[in-house]
Length: 598
Image 1: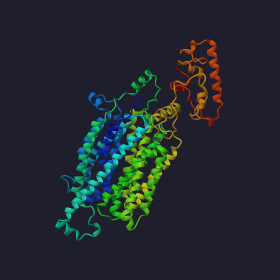
Image 2: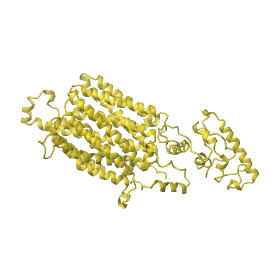
Image 3: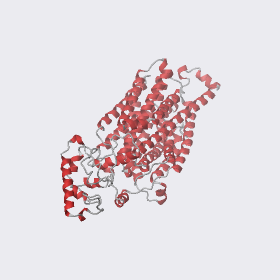
Image 4: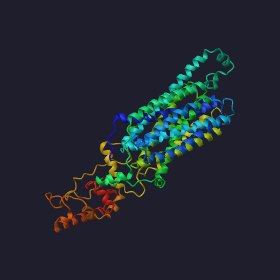
């Protein structure tokens, strides 16, 4: 059943549904390592292990949540509330309970050894990551459920990412305020003044163990704000009633709609090459975004030796530029298509990485670092929105497996991020320029990997299944483009009209099918195909509608000879003629491609 256009209130309420996750994720990736290394005084390897445990827990949780989120909910109350929203609510509660403990001193075990504290924090990290996965997967999987139109899916992803950026900006603004207010009060403290007299000037404003209460307060503020936006999401978004694939197919048959693509079982996804290609594409995107988010604060503190306020202002500039980029993403996508847009984002990101490697001097520390942050942010927003839109295209109408697909993508993302960050932490040489190399080569390599994957996808129609005829796929794209043109990778074509079939315009004028479709069309039994529907007489416009079998024999033979002649002329077309079925009725095309069977 075709889904109507979504009202703006629903789009906005959907967009804020991931704000709680975004607030927590911003703190997780931006400040986790610096909190555990500088405040809790964990060594770099131990701090990396905490992050690795979280990534593994998240990676294992996402496919599990995806599998169960795709199942039809048998509890009446949960079914009415929505199979996706139930998981979203569960995740929100778990995140709210566990997240504040991650950014707090070890309660009752402050004097314990590092491994004991490590075990303590891992309990809350695992609870937090399972809740985070519940919210992320259910929220992403809701996009194909809300709309089947590609341009609306892109719009929802853009709105979602716009609020992601606003959430990140909020975290950095809160951090800046908390650090500076607390810092001002510390400056008036005589004990602090005495202490800082023996500390080098470059380290007086650096983050240290005395900042544990600041990070706790930031975490509590994020939880409060996130809970408000989660409430808005749950009250403002009405999840469509879930209709199983079997019931939907019966409805399509009763209403004589074109047969939908075959249901994708979970094992079927692993038979699609594009499934693995897009998984690597999404992994490269998340690697780029997460790595610069994790190491920019350490780069600012360790390599550039800037004050603690830059730990908030530089990421703020980065995400502000990303927010501006997300606003124009829809127009860019419309002009050049998803794949070209992704490559453009990779090029911007690589430019930012190269500037990090070359940047030095007073100009760089004063204002150049903010331009670099802007390039990194614009590249990140472009890659993230486009990769999510391509993933939604891969799912297509197979919404019953949407959460599983997003779960698998997230599994690859989390494991790769956790392992690579752990390797980077374990390889820390302690040199001042170490984090400069990390951002340049690690983030730059992720962008390069993304470009290579796009090259392998150039001739691939994302969402078309292996062995599936492209005729119906083209028609579905044309139905979507009828309401609005968008930046998809196939050209927009006109919709077939049911009123155009007559003997005068029944011609092999089929200019928009791909050349590879012509041979299979020529093998169809065209007269047999035409007998399945009621149509007009081939010789007179005044003949009443009826079955062709009821026509006089001479008229039926004349029509049969006519279509056979047209069939032969079609088979003689050259490949570059690329025929299309502009004169056939929409209901005829799938039957024709099945050899004329009714």
